[in-house]
Every structure is written in C-alpha cells, then in structure tokens.
Length: 212
Image 1: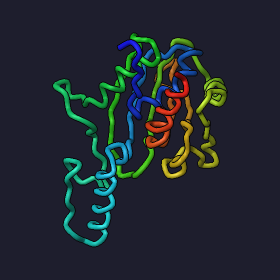
Image 2: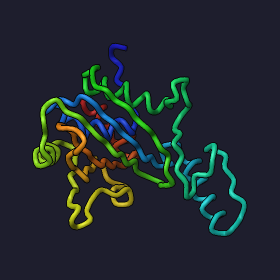
Image 3: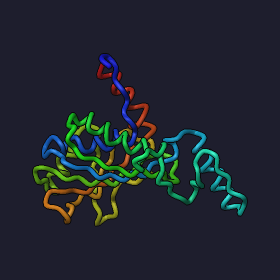
C-alpha cells in the first residue's frame, strides 16, 4: 500500500544487505540459501524452552517441549513457520518473495531451507549465488568491505570467520568464507551472520524510520 513501509523478515534482511552490493556489480541470477536461525527469532518463550531443556538433559530429567514440535536443545529443526502444500514453509517463501522485492528484480531465482538451531541469538546463513558477470573472490571482498553495514571477517588460514557467539550484540552484517563455487563458472559461496534482535528487528526499524 502507498505510504506504508514493511520491515522485512530478519533472515531476509541480513542476506540482502550482504548480497545487494554483489547484485549491483554483477547481477545475481540465482540464490540458494540455508539458514541457521536462533530461537530468539521465535521469542522469549523459545529462549526459555531452550534453557529449560538444556537443564533437563544435563540433569538426566524428562525433556518437555511446548514451543516447538520437537526438542530444540542439542537438536536442529528444519521447520520454521507453517508448512505449505508445496513442501516449503512460509518462512522459506518469505525469503523468496522479499528478496525479489527488496532487490527490485523479480527474475532472481531463490530457493531456501530454513533451520531452527539451539542458539539463543544471531542467525547464520550459508549462501550460494550465481551471477551474470563473473566476480572473483578479491572483487567480492572489496565490494562487501565498501558496503555500509557490512563487515568482512574472512581469514580461514587463521580460523577467522563470523560466529554467532561473537556477533551477538552488534549491529553489522558479517560475511566470511567467501569462495568460488567450483561447480559453476560464475558462482560464489558466502557465510553470513547477524544479530537478529538488532539488525533483524530493532535497528532495522530505526533505520527505516530515520530514512523517512
């Protein structure tokens, strides 16, 4: 609707912040993303459930679950939001639709698998892109390093890459594990991490308001 600005889904926000400078330089044709989303994306009840289940398991007690359909402690659930008839979830379809809308390119092919992981804060994403124009790893690093709100943390020889534990409480979108996809001529792989309670929610709302 005219005059309304929506705050996009937290998992979409961090991915698009990282991919937009690459899209502007080389036009992204296809995105394959798997997310590893923290329980804070569901809310306080989910954070409490993870805490309680961890205590129950370490105390050899009965593990109870109410927020999620299965135990989340020491487990990963490939199930965020409701399943649709297609087999995808609503969360996965949001990533497709919102990415096309924000990038202003309805032709981008997007496929997502969203996974809830036993982490309190921060979403991580394994992102694979195919571009129209070839981007080398140094070119991609330079574009990302110059992009507002993006921090490149990528030195695998020193075991440096973005970790949810380190990113919590910060505002930037962190990108690492930048490497060529050797299965196609014009592809890249990236690891993207952000604090979903800041960049994915509060900070993004503030930045939208400041832009108005």
